[in-house]
Length: 436
Ligand SMILES: [Zn+2]
Image (cartoon, rainbow, N blue to C red):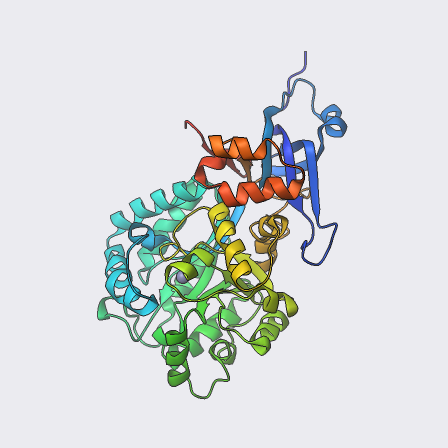
């Protein structure tokens, strides 16, 4: 009697993934109502109809039975701050007072490696509970905060992007980099970038907290290591935009400050992008930079409403971020829920299919990682989430009479949260499951 090789697993469920952006391509998604996902050595071997693929399984291999559930690629959160986990849901009238009152004192605690380690562990487990398998993460100015993060993500086998915050002005002394010194960031790149599944992001917090000297050196570092990521904030709220205008009078716009210092390029992710104009979005598209749209944060701080129509007009790369701790949920489903409402208030419409695209393949494309994650194309890393449409009594009642895939996904996005996540897998390993 033959037995199945240990390195192959199969999962039977409804499967959803994308090969294009549904905003621009009517045949962008693949949906297999009775589907099978086959994983070999931690990578996707095949994804399709159960009826077609079952016969290809090695003899003796029983698929894990997730019938009635929906499997999608793991969610990708392209903007959040792990050190701010403990200050989520802290009251403050707007971005700048919120930074002063909560953020800087909270981030100071990351001088202590033990605090950094315990926060990173909690943070990553919370992401996995919400079905997020990849995130683009701000640490603090302390190099130890980066070590703690990557040690915890490496122990879980996760595909994660993170970096040390750069700040050398307009911040408390205890969080200030030495002017002109990017040696810590470079050492962290050499230590962590492409080690296992870890990837490094050069991380100037935002233009007002960096001197021109620091921005210039940051751009040089980004050019020296072109396959690293860049993450920062841009055009979040009007007071901040005004401040940047005063600090950098020579720049055409807030975004232009970053372009002047060589910080717009592929793998550059800009959080918020609320007040960008048409020319800014054209520059985003031309440089291959990407917007990380953070609706729960933008509503929480009253920053403004992202303009999906304007961004799509320029075909700018888009993705979704929670922006925890200003964001109010770790759940990408809740982030979709709020993104939908933001679009409505701006007079546009975000179908659920588009939102699931943005949280999976759209994000992977924004990061130039579509050959590794974000879909079930053959050879992709087997990061996926099992969603339960009957997770709560209300969800069960609503999803029992859906007439289309769009209706089902819409109910998952609008009513779903961490309770909807039956299990999360990373590299083919179950890293979260109910009752675990
Ligand atoms: Zn942020």
